[in-house]
Length: 384
Image 1 (spheres, rainbow, N blue to C red):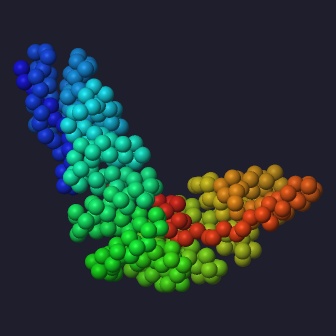
Image 2 (image 1 turned 180 degrees about the vertical axis):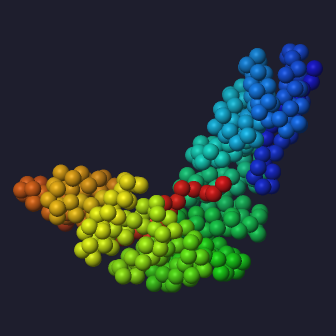
Image 3 (image 1 turned 30 degrees about the vertical axis):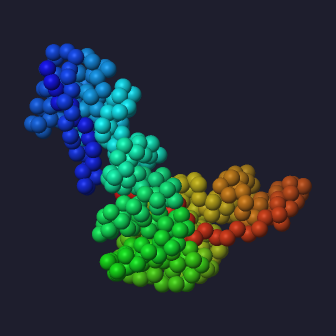
């Protein structure tokens, strides 16, 4: 008896498509045919259970495992789908289309690192498959491997030159990889096709800041905020650029606007707390910084500032914990060692204080992060 097993590839909108492969079944069971009939009727949960029965009775049937993965993916049960695809590939590594579907399932689960190997395999199977190439580029972007993302997204964008999402992600990848010639080319397209969008001004602002033109970058972020004051991170970017130039009176309202849009923006809370500390509003600074730390404990500026405030409050054990955490996050920043030296002085440990001050002298002040670095620190990956 002949059965039809269905595997996935990608359609033009990077969804799951299906093609048929005729296989000769080893047994006379009607279960696979029943599963296919249920699929055609749109009864996917029932089809999944039928495929589960098939693989239970015939666990070496790679085609059945792959078909189970397809229906699980259609139900958006991507992790279970990945498991089924991996089982199919373990049984038959050459099974057509399964690497592609496995990569898509991992991508849809935001498991970008896990998506990369099967998508690379799918592209090796068919180097002309632009859907696989696009997904691979997006997965590298999601995994913060921006130079690799540029390699694949450049080709994907050339194949689909009117796709604004691809141009935007490619531009962001070029910026994060500090490939500014690539970024400029993308800006030319973005600004020509979406000249008034907030995203266009933000991307140009990030590039200008990366080139050391921070005042010009501020102008672009101001234009972006005017175009769409609720765009994610637009106010944070504006605040951070002003903060870099020590324009704290301009930075504070921008951070406040970002927090109004997104109360959970830990970076905006942390940098606003830093501004309030510089204004000597210790109570307000402490409140903002502790809120930021509760959301994200890996913000060096927040840990450092908390250590400063706690030192002033003579809460030395808590101050030491905060400053040590700041040191752990960036051991090459001299300010944290200076603050540790001051803390050890206050605690009466002069020998350790001198070691910290000696460390300050050994370090050169690092160049401040660009707005690309700060904004990408809060960017989790491509939208799906």
